[in-house]
Length: 271
Image 1 (cartoon, rainbow, N blue to C red):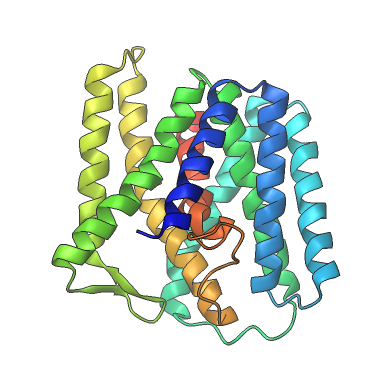
Image 2: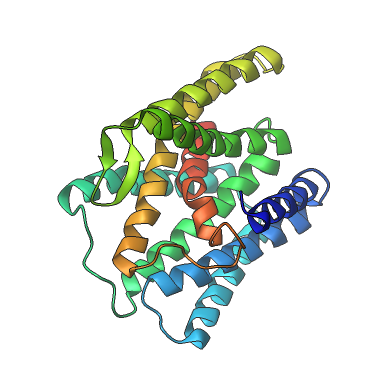
């Protein structure tokens, strides 16, 4: 494994752990805003914004919009409807894959795509903040568990896909992904869920909520991964950027998170 990839992973893990467990709520929101800004900057490049000033402006505006949303008081009802919007969007994505499996090349800035990205980043940031500090039984550990669903799906899919991958999942979108990889990721996630359910002290009635949220979030993480792959293919790019040495861009690391966290938060808010 390349040295820069390992070093980047270590730095990211340390920063993430400090922000998750030791930062104040305000600092946590600020970090989310910065993450949204970096993601929006990369998204603008994929969406066909050619000028650097335009890319920077879009990233800055979306990051500021996310901060405003994160710092404003949010009622449970508001979060419910926002997460419902996120759920409906990700439910529509498989239909879009079926009806239009490959996008035409993105040559000019697409307003529709830019607005879609801004919406997805802000909803995902709100979902993370909700699970971290606002939801029933909210805690850094609850957020960590929701994020681990995405990570375990990725790791399980990578290992299983390399060993047993035969049937392509979506060859026109991401030729390297296989159904065997998805099953391997799902198996790893379900095993981890069973361990968490046995070890953690969940309140009465929360176990079914955890199971449903985990299953839905695991499925959504695959859709989020494919969605970003589809946009990158239309943009003619392998990585969203080179912000993270050895890892590509921020979007390449959080594509599954964009879908899984709002879906997890939706189940948590509506159950």
